[in-house]
Image 1 (cartoon, helix red, strand yellow):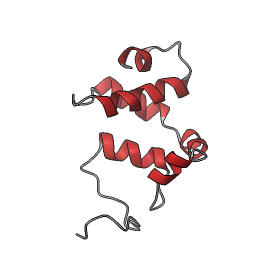
Image 2 (cartoon, helix red, strand yellow):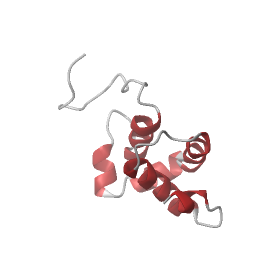
Image 3 (cartoon, rainbow, N blue to C red):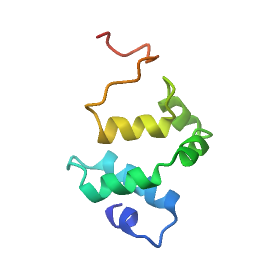
Image 4 (cartoon, rainbow, N blue to C red):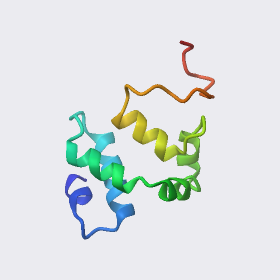
Amino acid sequence: MRERWRDRTQAPEARLAAAIGWLCLTDEPASDDLREDVGDLATNERAHAMDDLPWMAAAGGSGETGLQRCVREMLHPEQPDPMEHDDPWAPLP
């Protein structure tokens, strides 16, 4: 997975999928180049296109696409959920 997201000859969608897969499979902190690549690859257009996938749409909410929420949770866990947070299972503040 690591080699796949770093390989600039791969399609952007494949690189993004590999980067997310790498984040899911490792306990290592995200490197600066991984953060930069995900930031570049996780465009709004791509995020909205990925919401056609039922599992990705289910990850979204509170005005965020599933991809936006995944990126925020994986790379920026210190950022709070949006104010219109609508996760009924989340603990109350």
